[in-house]
Structure formats: structure tokens, C-alpha cells
Length: 241
Image (tube, rainbow, N blue to C red; front, side, top):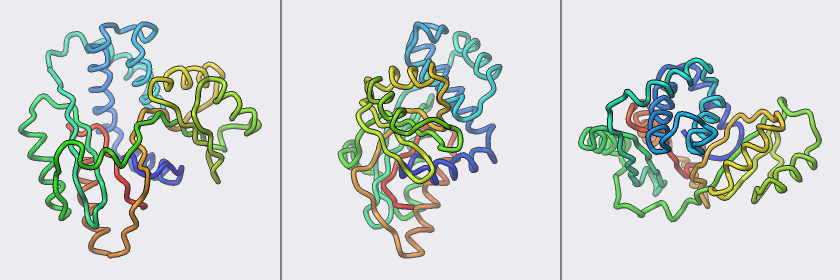
């Protein structure tokens, strides 16, 4: 679940992932397979998309042998996955974007619609909420895992091509243009800087607060159902959790 950019939510996501690593690894495995097919190579040196998915896998603590196994079996996988994006509204006008990789569009569309409906929301038309988000590369560095100087890190990130650098309570956040994300991430990786999250994501321009208990229960129900769907790869929303 990609929500607010603050590290507290990232840690919450990690804890949730730890309880369901198998499902998370399955989703990333699918991304690895698609990256190999679309990039035309199992060698990350010649496939930038694959390099980025491998970084995402490592940030989610996927073992190296599991990563290798998924990459190697990609060419023998006959599944034809399609990228589909759904947009819609949750309680009180909250905006939700769902990215899916599926080999059965009807199944996925039905499941996504059901998740919105169960949470008293609705699926909208393409573009109905995406204008409320900015597509950016986002890198999160845990302060507990970085012992260097924050100003040096900021200059390093900006020199690599980052757009913005934020010093939060417990983390550093680096924002990049999507086209510059790989170069910035690779530069930090080569400098042996540990990243707790590194991916191209959709960042809300503004956030919506929910104070009604029913609204909170409903959006939580929708997001949980989407998280549990094997076809859903990423969910972005502007709820201020």
C-alpha cells in the first residue's frame, strides 16, 4: 500500500508485509517476470526496468535466490499479463488509484469494483482522480540505517539528479523525476546507502482527513480487499491515515 510518504506509514506497510511475505513475493515475482519479457533480457545491466524491480524486491527483503529463480523462470512462463489501472473514489471523496497486472481482465475488474463497493465507494472513469497525484520516483532512507551527514546525503542525491530532499523525523525522503529515478537509485546503491523503499510511485498533491468512524472502516475495508487481491500490484490513495 502506497499512501502518505512519511516513514511511519512505510514501517506500518513493512510490518503488514512481514505477516504476508508469500503474497508480497508473489506480486513482486510477477513484476520480475513482466520486466524480463518487456525489457527483453534477464540481465539487469541491460534491462533498466528489471533493475528497478530487483531494487524493490530487495527493499521488501526478498532473498536473492528467490529473485534469481523468478527471473530465470520468466522466459518459460506463458502467462500474458496486462497492465490495467483503475481509478475511483472512497468515502468523503478520497481518491484511490489501483494498478493491476492480470491475465484475466474480467476477473480483475469484478474484484476491484467489489472492493470499492464494499467500502461504499465507486470506480470512476480513467483520469477521474489521477490528476490529483504526481508520478515521482521516491526513495526512503531510514535514519537508523544511515550514519552519515544529512547535508552530504542531500548534495549527493541532488548531484545524482534528484528533484527534492526532505529531512523527516525518522527518515530522509528523496524525490526524483520518473525518468531520473534509476540513475539516482543506482548512484545511492553504489555508495552502499541502504534504502527502505525505492520505487516510482504516485504521490498525492493534497490529503483528505477522515474523522467519521464509518468512513475510516469503509476505506480500510476497500484498501484491505485490494491488498489481498493477487492481481493488484499497487494502490495509491490520498487518505491522511
